[in-house]
Length: 393
Image (cartoon, rainbow, N blue to C red):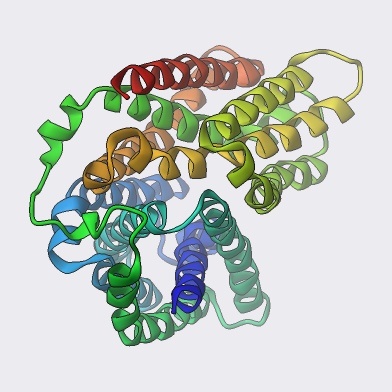
């Protein structure tokens, strides 16, 4: 039962990644068909991000009342329904309306599943879980591409992913007894802490020593990861003079580096532990940024640097999440992981556009230095967190 539920959770995270890259791959067609300005994609993503932040902040109350399994099933159903709504939308306004349940569902399943795996499974599985997210995010552009190239249109692409999510929803509702049985059988990770009646709440959670440090660390990580991925191609083209086609290929390798890195980290994370994995990841990121910024006279080192930054990013997100019960207690983990998710979404939503302003107003050549700021911020905050937790222990 333990292994079967784990397979279902893996599939759920593949499903969670599926919608994340649909809008970007379909928007060049969508905005023309709906007669919307090209910049309006940002409005849709902001609505989705707002929904994920809200659902992350209330995840503790909802998950402790309904249980992680039911929250996951309902959340996946909400995203499936929202994607189907996208597929029947004939105006930009309807995209915005359907973006609301999409964001709420995505944030709900993200917070619930991350906490459940942190409580009940090893660090290895947390890394592979987020590797599965990368698989989903990599598959969906091919689904959309098939729909567009086959003449079926962008709505068919959204409908296809919606059907996949609906199928998963059915399996999740059928699997609900497994979640309860796994909780009853588990005696190692919090004794059912995720469903205790006491609600910690946002204010109490923020008063726990070290929580502010992990929130800043998470904010910095997601700011770095999202900015690195979004602006890599533009930096290579506009600052390095790389051809657009080549730049796009190497920018995509950043995400491949994250996905493959998490797969590899799954084999070693239990041996080294979460704290060391974060340190190793940050060291690799610094090396990657150095390769991007140093003028070697050839772009090969910049290409390699982007891939290395992706590899460095790989263990950090899973390790921060998985270490939460150990750092702050299993009884507090759902509340804190929910806040961490909200902090992560805030960083990934606000910081990449801020760099766009900097690039336009000053120079896109500041790209690696902007990434370096967040890398240093993570180093300082994560090490302060380690000292705080050690003193508390």
